[in-house]
Length: 248
Image (cartoon, rainbow, N blue to C red):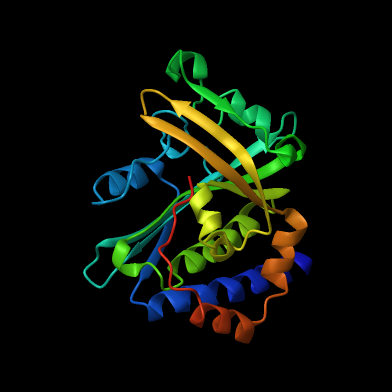
């Protein structure tokens, strides 16, 4: 009965946040066709390019190993995006996976530019092995920022990743200003370290120095299964009025 009980707890958790999105006039949908996802994001004004981690022309995602979330307003226009994928690092670790550029390209020898580089010196990155749920491409349209929307979509993603994969770690990479402005708290991550990814992708015109933020699998499970509906709704209603940052 454990699996059934967990499924019920996850469904209750997701329902809280889906209802919260609906109350803000946002209709959420989830999918796993990343060709469709990239088509949507490329047609979305003001959203920056999707990193190659989530682009099937550079890093195909097998069925069951990735999903995306799209939110639209009453006019069916996109107001938020988010994506997640599973990295099986049973024989590797987060730092090695990113530094090898395999996180970005299925075949770095073919797709990477000779000057592409990624350095990951966050101390915990080398200890992150096993099933890694990597979340990225979080974007919220300007007129919906400062309303707790980032927190809603992050929670939906946490619930979906837990239900699909029960990962050993759930992590993201974020710009330093996300911590300076207190935005990482909205993503409900408990740990953070600098130099998670000092990245240069020449042909993508990407140059970043991001922090690594994460939860352990045990912490993720506790977040999903031990939630209190009243407490969560109260937290949502008191979210800080700050611009929402995007996960790398």
